[in-house]
Length: 385
Image (cartoon, rainbow, N blue to C red; front, side, top):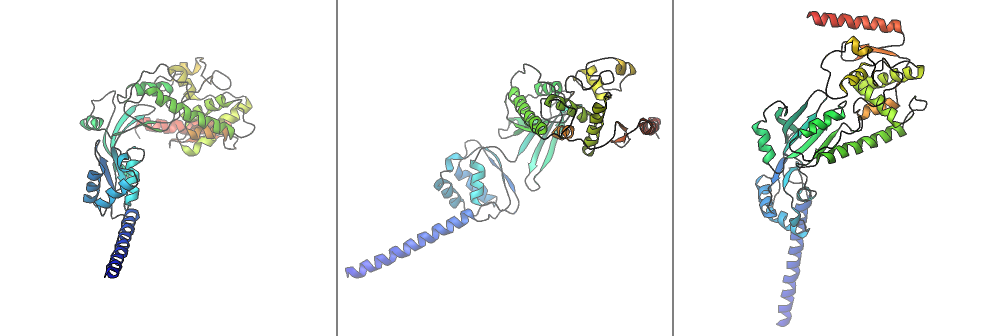
């Protein structure tokens, strides 16, 4: 009798272990397999939330097949207490494992609302936008000039949301004064800026920032990135360039940046200035004259006067030999690279061609013909034809 009982108990135990093992294997498969989500979603995790609430929301939105397995997996992997508040992108077909990793890692929101402060050459603008999970593109909600316009309700609303992301973007060719003045006007930041960074020392790029972040820390990040770019460009420079040090490279790059916004022209523009330096010709470039007038404090807002072209300043390359003493703007990476790797040409002249680009020439005679064409285009435009 006891032998039969023992045999039955052993059978039950084996079957039970088999079922438990099968259940664990099934749960593991559910945890690691591709999820049922057909279209990406933006999951918002409120401060003070927990895995129970999050798992129910994910199940309700069709992102996971079983909220219980999701919670148990989070507990088993010791991730339940690492849940972060924010807005997180849950991609199409994401597994439970991938979702848990997304919402418990560094806490940085990967979707939702973003306020971007764009510092351009002529103006600074604020954009409020939201990432569309389905297209992974931003939908613009509002755009305005904080210095000139009232802040829209959408901006005020997003400023109050704890998971709103912030970004500062610098355009190529802005001056350090423009950057500092713009950052002063961005109310989401903190800290007084003691001094304007050296011209050319800030890297035009896009920077993730946090609400309340010190403005000086952001400037430091811009300076650090630009220094890395300067070092790399100088390290990879062509041999035989008429540049003595990285500072001269930076000055030339800033002139290239201000002379053309056409990516394919940078190498040609660089070649003109390198050829002129090699031949002892003055650079004779208008942006340097403008910088001598404005000192980088805003834009000129009009054409140059003959008196300004004739007036000596440290930056007026119609009046001085060689490079000016400082950069005239903050050049981007492409202009730095063009300064140390100019195209191999014999060009020493260029003028606008009416298309947004320039016409290049090797001789003064050819250049004068290009100038005449440009004057005709200007005359036609001014006459309204």
